[in-house]
Image (tube, rainbow, N blue to C red):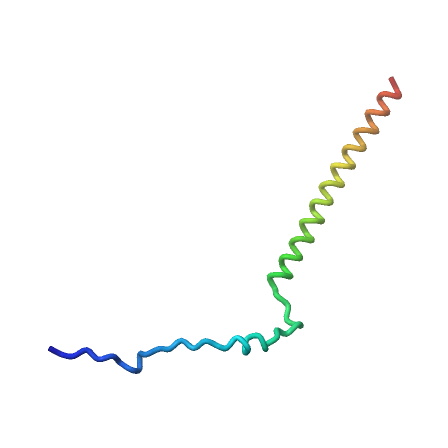
Length: 75
């Protein structure tokens, strides 16, 4: 029967960087994250949209209120 031998070329070892090496690296502050910019843009767009909806409702409500007051005064 043939003997099974381990192939040394397939021996993969996991190398882990030292914690001090990773901690010493500082990210470049000039690099911006695109997903964060997109999130900020969408947040501003939603805030503007909601504000305009509230403004339209307030305008409609106030015009109806003034119309009702005019009808009360005329009666």
